[in-house]
Length: 539
Ligand code: OOB
Image 1: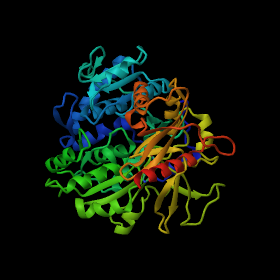
Image 2: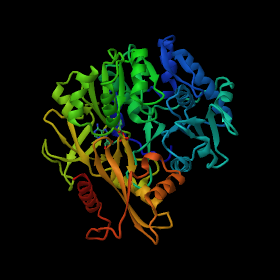
Image 3: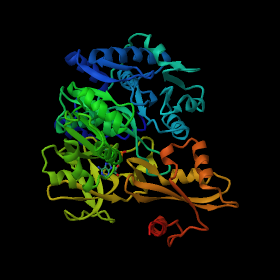
Image 4: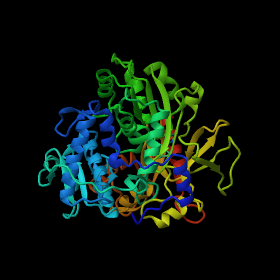
């Protein structure tokens, strides 16, 4: 792929020699598991019609082969990009493995994305097709499809309307396969989005499969593992840390939760004898609260992973006594580096740190503002380089100059400190990104939408600390003429196709913004103003 920055040759040689990178690709990943685990159940979940299905490894492989044939007949070829926006339904697995089989590259959109984001992915990655479910969570995804260029193939799981039915593709029979090299790009993940434009993250077969295999080992995944996938399966955490890929790697069973509510999840844990699952901190708090009034049998649950945003020590301490399982903290990023507390770590390490890296060759540096290494235990910016961390975003030469150091370290934007044992404690974030319960919001992007309103002169989004979500968003707005009401502004943003979680929680109209010495909007000052007015409200 022309826009992909490969690992330098000497690093690639080292990672190969160390056995991290192998020849295995996602093309043969599933067929190989089907050879070994043919009749084991690979996946249990609802399909687009709401019917629960259970597929063995052989059935999932066969189904993916047939869909691959359908995609091939549509003209999807090795190396083509396809935006996949599916909820946690069995078709997600079938479609993703079908695309892998062809050597086509899924672009992993999340169910919460709307037309603004999807339109961008389709254009930027020059995608050939867009795969959706007809409806999910009260939203009709065909509405997004109608806003896209008519040259794009739209494939729908469920009621296709005017578009192509996934069930029609299935009928097409198996395809011939063009073999791909393990060191080429397998798919594009989305970055949390730290600047105006979301970034696409090219991951190779070799680097990603290394992280999957090691994650499975670190997290104790085996053919007896029964994982409940609660978070959207397209996200890096439930996909590969160890995620559904780690479970399929080991021959275990993946169970897809139709929604993340504790009532749904608890009854599924009981019914399917779930052994592990992964959550973001706000959901973990909801589960802890719901456990008090639930008599569900959660005794099968061995490991609860929490990650995606900082999990407070107080909450972390409650997990084992209240849910009866081991807590594993996971600090990762779609760009690569993933850290885990180990299952046999002492309790204090598990509740006070965000773990240590997967690989002995993960290079972790903590530096000050000038880029000099700080002493162990001191707080600084986290930089990282290693066998499964990208060297550049897809087609983003300008941004890559600042997102990576000259010698290829990724600037994570996280403020951390290291313990004597090499464990990472996350202290905050330097990048101007808001983390609303694990969902990342780029302030600038939302601001751009706000200023599109005829009565908005300027806008700035800042976060306010929140006990439940970690952070909430507040939009400060300077009006042009008659100030729009908060309700009107929020519905304006939704009308522009912005994902719901990006719509600001609060809107405040102000006469003007505080500015820094060079005249930029001072977000720090806005945040302070917000904290002051918030404290007034509380007192
Ligand atoms: C995961 O991936 P992304 O790409 O959505 O977000 C990465 C960012 C990190 O740079 C950090 O700011 C934050 O999310 N983060 C955490 C954290 N885990 C992620 N901050 C504090 N504590 C944690 N445990 O979020 C992700 C990818 C793979 C595994 C787990 C999470």
